Amino acid sequence: MTIKLITNNAHQTGASSQNVIELANDADPRELKLDGIERIDLNFPKFTDGRAFSQAFLLRRRLGFKGEIRATGDVLIDQLVQMYRSGFDSAVLREGVDASAAQRQFDRYHAFYQADAVHRQPHFLEATA
Image (tube, rainbow, N blue to C red; front, side, top):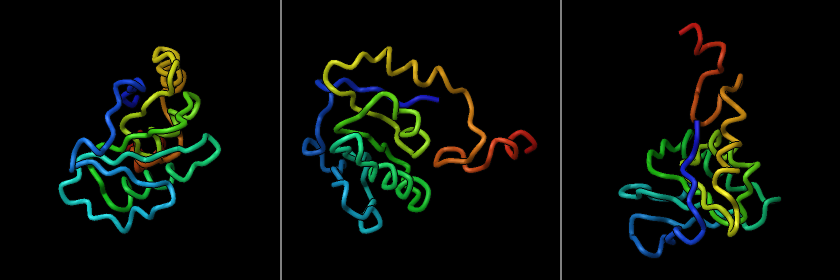
């Protein structure tokens, strides 16, 4: 369980490709035309604004988006595990954040009892299937 961690200076905005969408955090993902889209960047304008979690879940579970969902903006390392569980594939770390410290968040948690955007069945059902 992990998402790809991208340093702030290595991130290229969606403006560099027509197959990438930068979705505002107040936009409804259900209104997007997803044909040909390879990546959707969802923005966290500040850590207290979690609307991008809902957008990622909608894209992954309800709309069946198979491309990359990337977290941008005020990405905190203590939210990375929840980002993964909501459907994010990658996250752009804030300036000065150590990627090894971010990776330790994933090392702390090996499994979850509840279902999420990635694992559709609860843990107790996966074990018996």
